[in-house]
Amino acid sequence: MKIIDVRACQPATPDSPPDWRTSLGQILVAVETDQGMIGYGVGGGGLAAVHVVRTVLRDLLLGRDPSSVEQLWQEMYRATLPFGRKGVALMALSGVDLALWDLRGKAAGEPIAGLLGGEVGGPIPTYTTVWGPIEEIAHEELNAVKLHLGRFDPQADNDAIIARVADARDRLGPDCQLMVDAFMNWDVETALRIADKLVPLGVAWLEEPLLPDDLQGYAQLVGQCPIPIAGGEHEFTAAAFAELIDRRLHHVLQPDVCWCGGLTELVKIYEMANKAGLRVCPHRGSEIWALHAIAALDRQPLAESGRPWMNWVGGQPKIVAGLIQLGDAPGFGVEIDESKL
Ligand SMILES: [Mg+2]
Image 1 (spheres, protein in one colour):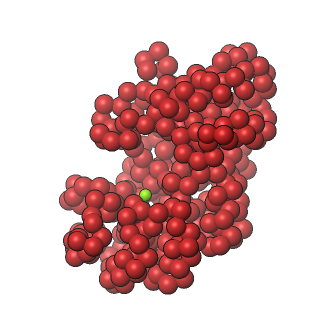
Image 2 (cartoon, rainbow, N blue to C red):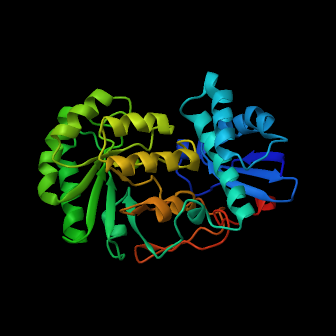
């Protein structure tokens, strides 16, 4: 089998937020073979990533056998190194990697979860990430909720942060798992001060309190913070995760399979984390691209709610009463109508 075309575009998402998630939003990658098979993947990075796919990565892939995914990953990583390593180039590479995995699954007639040595299995528990008022979701059947605290100034809004978490705990009841996401806005001192006040509210993890490059800060925090530390959605490649894992800088690792280098890297991250006894909770894990890995490799599955505006990905299972059920179609099981994008 040979690759005869590699396509990428950024489909319109009218309901996406008016920020980088729109301007540099998710891209669709299609890898077509001479046997008429098309693999689909989703990456990030908007038109900048589309350009990377259409130039360097397409040049590299045309005429190649798509089945040696890991070998092609290494070549794509090297080809993008001078301008890549992290960020947009890896987001582009992620989309291509997922499309190659989709082809691998379709060629084998197996869902990706099966290729990973697992099975599609039963319903997977999910958690819902909340940006707005908790009232909007408090009526739903939820086992787990994460509060996004990105808009709060950790100094000026200290009391407002605690009040928001206390209010959520009150409305959700004692049995609902509750997590908080600081979106890289705090420092070590702030994180410790706020975490102390969150302990009585039963917070399961504190996500991204510090900048992703503040590894010293994380080393300090992870030893002192009374709440488990989560992070990794803004980290790239298994090599970078290896340091987070070896140094035990996070209790919960949250790679984004559409950004961090694709499934090739997510599989390595799961292997390392499972060996180290650390938990993996992929960013946007209920989106179909990470869901197969969760079904096959995760010891404590909890899939994060996805982006509601990504409605051009057909075949994405829906969350029902806090659970999500993967289908058994070959590959990722997505249905894409390129003519409509
Ligand atoms: Mg987050």
